[in-house]
Amino acid sequence: MLVKICHILLAICAVSSAQSRIKDLADVQGVSATQLVGYGLVVGLMGTGDGSNATATIQSTANLLRNMGLEIDSRQLRTRNVASVIVTADLPAFAKPGQKLDVRASSMGDARSLTGGVLLMAPLKSPDGDIYALAQGPVGTGGAISQSMGGSSLQQNQGATGVLPGGAIVQRENLAVRLDEGPLRLVLHEPDFSSAQAMVDALNKEFGDKSAIAEDAATVRFLGKDPQTGRASLVAKIENIRFVPQRIARVVINERTGTIVAGSDVRISEIAVTQGSLTIRVDPTWSTSQPNALSQGVTKTVANAQIKTEEQKSQMQVLPANTSVGDLAKTLNALGVTPRDMVAILQAIQKSGALQAELVLM
Image 1 (cartoon, one colour):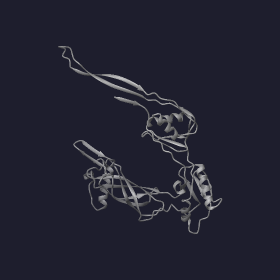
Image 2 (cartoon, helix red, strand yellow):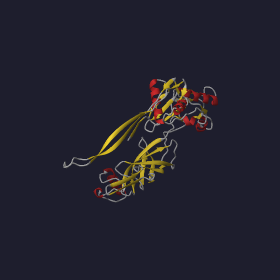
Image 3 (cartoon, one colour):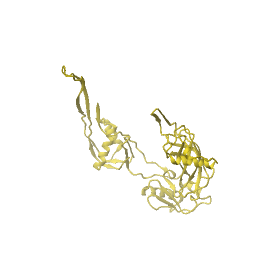
Image 4 (cartoon, one colour):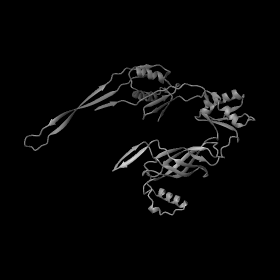
């Protein structure tokens, strides 16, 4: 048995600053999608639906049949081919009646899979309680498999959720979203005072001085007048203006996958780094133990463990001030440091106060 004592896997990417469009970094305030939710039944399953204890599914099926003129005792229903689902969708800001939306269906009972099922008409409501879309159609689960026989089961991929591409039809427009009311404000996806001011400078350069001001780190207000062609044409022009955003120096570490993503503006103060790893090897040797004559004992095989330890010799490397994460990676790679150890070294550098960036653990 071999036990390797080391740390976490690493990959480093450098991101260079470049001009970006306003539409890629900000949204018009008040113009956003509205989340919709509804309840429905998925039918046509091959015995992978809800069981006999799913009261909601049984009651919903009985109500459905009753609305179609069939009176059925709910106690006689078997719903292994039916599943209750929660249906969700995002209604775009200016969606019009007749447009189609993508829909997600998620099992809310004990159904094993929605593969092969068809969602019956399900109304989708917004937070105000009004119905904005109707969903219906076949549910796709990406080839999920769920089978059981004789106490054994086989499952591949997640089949309890599925999608209906274009499975909902918009019934009414979201009147709460209007572009022509109130002042025009742009909201940054990532609030930052420097980025907000950079956007203001780009707008003033395009439309003239005092055309925009930064109200706070996230909001820029446009002070110019709407053109005769309407506010939609103004927004179309604004969102294609480019400026250089000021990103926060940040190193993101995902310890589960061992991935590190660091921006090009990350710097490290002068430090000395050394690294080593310890390997523990356990090699069992097998021997046979024979009982004494006439002792009525049993012959046994015994493992005698031999433990060996190896520690790699390491060098201390001194890095000058203003070293980037990329330079550090190159130096440590030259010393033979594994990617898994680089993550632990970066965490130690941050603890020492030499990392001039925010360290984010995922």
